Image 1 (tube, helix red, strand yellow):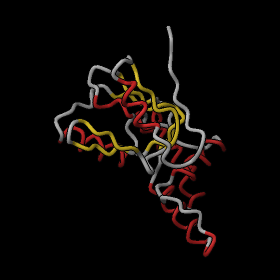
Image 2: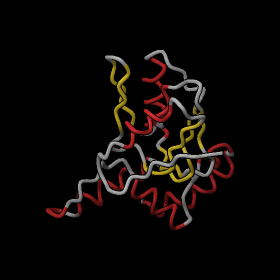
Image 3: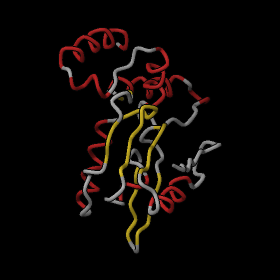
Image 4: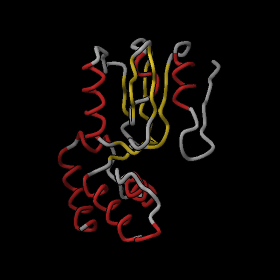
Length: 168
């Protein structure tokens, strides 16, 4: 079974979303493999523009499976906001799946991101302060909380009990 992979080789707007949206019409599945809800991508259908930051580019194709993969820094607040906009425009979110191994961005990640950026003074790097970097730090450190952990309240409580004091 043939597959097509679109890989960005640089930071910034390089047109991946437009290419993926174009190819999605002939695909069975669109997978967002990494990144977070920062800059995002715009898809134009007819006269209407749709701005996505976390959702995969193929989400407007309701007959295509759209997956948010394990390499994505998943922001539940951002996700729910985008889904609300999607549904407000008459589209369904039923074709979206989230990998249970994707790491979750928590409010403390966003606060850490903002504080780190502020501490740089004149040497700011221009972070969106969405908590993506700190979430990836937890992933690399193997201390992060994953989407699948949200399903088990006891496990989530245990993991948060370990994380929150460190983050403070």
